[in-house]
Amino acid sequence: MTLLSENIALQSFEEAQEYYHSRGWTDGFPIVPPTPEAVQACLEWAYMRPDELIGVEPVRERPITAEKLAINAVMAGCLPMHFPVIVTAWNAMLKEEFLLHGATASTGGCAIFVVLNGPIRATIGCNNQFNALGSSDRATSVIGRAIRLGLINILNVSPGSIDRSTLGHPGKISYCIAEDEEGTTLGSLAEARGFPSEVSTVTVFAASSPRQIMNEWTKNPEEILDTYASEMKSNMRSYSIWSGNYAIVIPKQHRDHLQSAGWGRKEISHYLFEKARISRSEWADVGKSSVIKGKGQQEYSALSSPEQLLIVAAGGPAGGFGAIIPPWLGNKSQAVTLPIGVCVDCET
Amino acid sequence: MAINVLNPSFEKDAAPFDHAPRLNTLSGKKVGFISNGKEGTLGFFTHLDNLLRSDFKVADVIWLQKANYSAPAEAAIIEQAQAWDLAITGLGD
Image 1 (cartoon, helix red, strand yellow):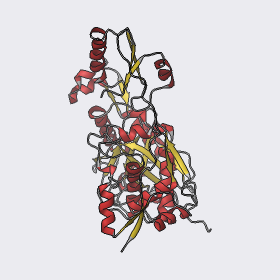
Image 2 (cartoon, one colour; image 1 turned 120 degrees about the vertical axis):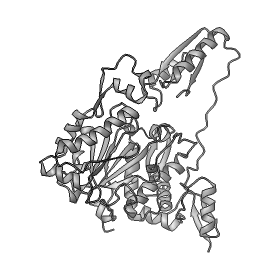
Image 3 (spheres, one colour; image 1 turned 45 degrees about the vertical axis):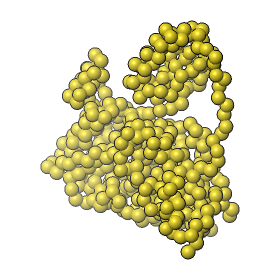
Image 4 (tube, helix red, strand yellow; image 1 turned 90 degrees about the horizontal axis):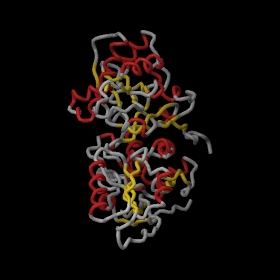
């Protein structure tokens, strides 16, 4: 296998750190030096050629090749078995409806929220329970980081360059979770989006930071979901009123109450579709009177349809917590789910 | 211990392009604005419109707005811009 990238001879691991940092090729953390052997191992795992075209970023017409993704994956700490996930995530991000350039350049500071479903989660050792939205496990941490490093290095999505985020958020370091499919009877996000349970998938979503909620004082499904709806409405008032994909992450305690009451994804999404609404006049409560512009009675829904809600089962077993993850900016970017198109455990 | 590592960045130069021919004067020219539609653009382009008409005597100023401020301009806008002498875009937030 002939690799095409510039091959750089350095004297030590330490020199590699400074060399990469000095060129703006990192996220500020130390990187794993991407040796040709490690990069080649990623490509071989996924049966990909170095020059295999993953896609073309449509605004800047910049080609994304497998080799460049593999280099950034190694730098992030990925093992070869993580690489197919990263390729699939990029395939999804390059779909027109994802609007990758806008999502990565915007002052709104969104990050790429990634949800893994299917058998791949066990293969690569994901933990979908404790600290699910934090550094819960090696696989999701390095996969999320690899996506960010790829954006930085291949598309120049560096702060102040293409990335014009006013604030950004910590999800821009890594923002990947695996769904706790075994711990729920709700079915998976991937199934809700049309994929069989035996297929591994990657969902990408241009997302703001998580907003955590707490309600430990009821088992009533409506009351539990009213808390989630309240946070969605808060986002609509204080951030963006426009409807779009919202993700909600429901840990086990809330899921148990919902499931015991016979609620499934359909009931949850329809309930939040109806409840997460505000009128434009509510902007007056949060200092935005000047943009009501005589349309105070106009009602807005967080979701254009119940199907826009991305329900993710994840989180530790105890605690009446949950999270909503709002869209970067309404429907400008659509969440995309794709199956992982290469076999990660086939015999050669 | 010496190591060999690979460049993670996009190594090819951006596709070359030529700048549009510069105008010798704005007087009598048709100027187009392609606005991203953000809140701040209204004041900016209104002021610029006035300035172009009063101080630079342009013949006309046409305003167009993208449907999605985070996406490239639609083909219909680009087609309409072919008839302009000057386009101003990419400004405002």
